[in-house]
Image 1 (tube, helix red, strand yellow):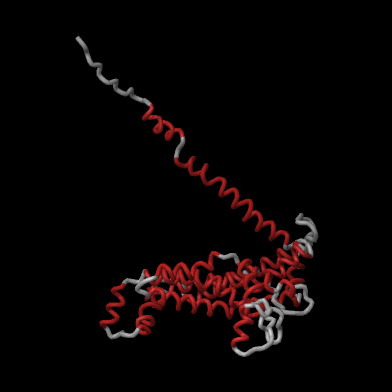
Image 2 (cartoon, rainbow, N blue to C red):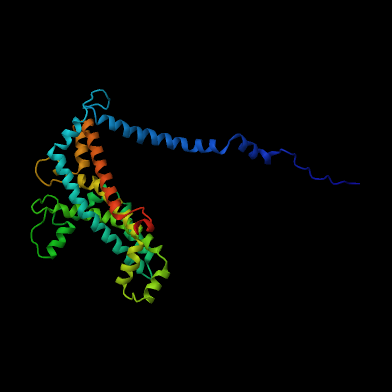
Length: 327
């Protein structure tokens, strides 16, 4: 006579209950601290501590050292603002910002509207226009300087100039009167960043309900310009303000293309004066080893960026509700 043994029942508190006991020993807040502590420590050490140390350095006569102790008050700021080279760099970046921000804004918005109207191939054009945003500013600047606007007869720009009737090669980077080097600086910046902001505008356009366009057509808005003026543009208000803020901040932080395209002319021995504030601070802090003046200049540029950003946001009414704007 054979008997069949019944399957063993799992004991209470067996292996399947182990995760519950582990979870009771490790509360959620401990896991959160364990996961975020390295990031928070790195953020404090390499960002906020560095910013605080730089602020202290700006009130020190720190030449060849980053140690504190030789306090000189606001002397670095007075000397910096009284330096004609620094004031010229501020004028340079202001002119660059005043031109590059509206041009990039208009191109990005126009491309976004055109791509959004396509019935087919929208993904292809999105990718095509966005690819330059993944290119390093250093690489783009060197390609522009050494290939497109190289100044040699084989350069792309000079080849096009020959087709238009010009017989001599044009030194795009070296020509100061007229300042043709600005064409090189502006075009490379437009190529590198327009696609990124086009994607932002395109995302904003695609969030606009289609019912609004249908209602506008019923009310008599039949042309594309009327639809853009009365529907698309008002609905893109927050996106437009955000794009403008990003463009202003990026324009004031211009460094890579100026440094790499005009590298041979930054010594002050003639040529194009394309020294931006960041290039001036780079030469002051790392070239002259004057870390006190370099730190002071960094906070001056930061203050300018903050002021322009706040003014632009204030004029655009960014963050205000519809009720507040109607008052």
